[in-house]
Length: 302
Image (cartoon, rainbow, N blue to C red; front, top):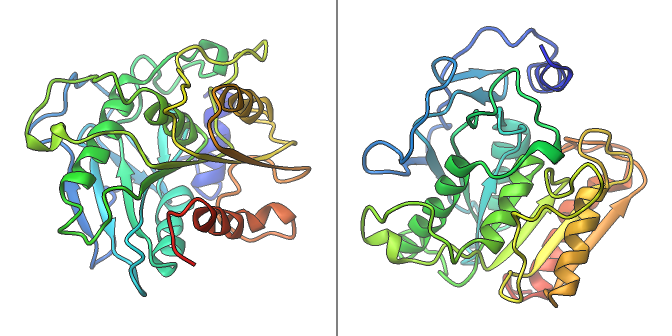
């Protein structure tokens, strides 16, 4: 097993050897919706059935989104949460359900995206280093479709269709950048009326994003930043030894060059995959900074 996948198993499977699989289902009270009325476009074979192993999902061929309604006063804002996992797995707890618990407690509707992984040809024994990565088309198709569905059903879910953002971690942070910059390019043929909606998020949050910098620290040319890219928040640890601090640095520079409102927070310590779990490090305060930022840009009222 590659070193990267071994780290994933240890991190998200509590040290097990990625065994004891089961299929993930949201907790009672949350609405799970298939993204596509039939089979997803361009479905590719995966190594086995969809499985859940202690907080990590793999082999997703039937993508869904799960709606978590606010537990307090509804602000009208919504955030689509995109878990990471190197396009091999989805860290559905650490970078998914735990994030939704935080957002809904703040009056924000959370949409948890379960997108297709692993991304062919990036399968279990892949080399997923940033300089080899281009675009996971199935994952981006699912992300675009989910944003359109949220807008199409915004009234039903008591969401303001002009205050819908995205928040992603690691590989999910890369998808945040892609949906923020590639919304003018449709990657699939429309399947219903929802696809007439825009797939551009109104704001974006990328936490320790991956795949944005090449091995020689150049900006990934697949992410086409423009002035239309939504306001963006970045949080990153300088000692991230998985994707590296330059992932956020090159994206910040590209956003600034395009005159996109961007706020970046760099921390000396924190590593990778810290999620929302509290530690003694200052980096654990990033959720509060996101809350302040959302008020600052007018997505959530004071």
